[in-house]
Image (cartoon, rainbow, N blue to C red; front, side):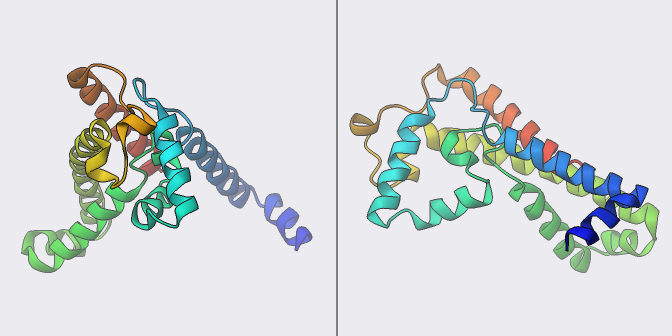
Length: 182
């Protein structure tokens, strides 16, 4: 098995693709550890630790797993790649319903590039919506995480509300776009 891996590194195109993929994985892992400015991730981490110890929080834990642990850390990549996946699914379904999109898909490379562009624009819109909703949930965590007591765990958002929402939404959108970039 090790010889097969070393042989794959001898092919220049395959080597560059492997190194590119490893570089993207590195960027994704770093983005999952950089907390948003204005968030104290310790209350969220303590809450998740308590939920895991008690066997609860399965749904939020599943979402946290999809973000690579970025949700618990309040990280820049807290939205993960899910907005892009949602936009891709939406456009796959729309091509079956909207004749213009169906024609674009059948036009070959030019049409597919246009669909990819539309999917990326939709990803930005989905990121903005999900980013605002996630920040609102972090400002009032008891709404999203049942059993979260601010008196016990502490505040997650520790700065003023409006500019924090704008700034964090932009950061999370940029984090998702960075993960989506190929």
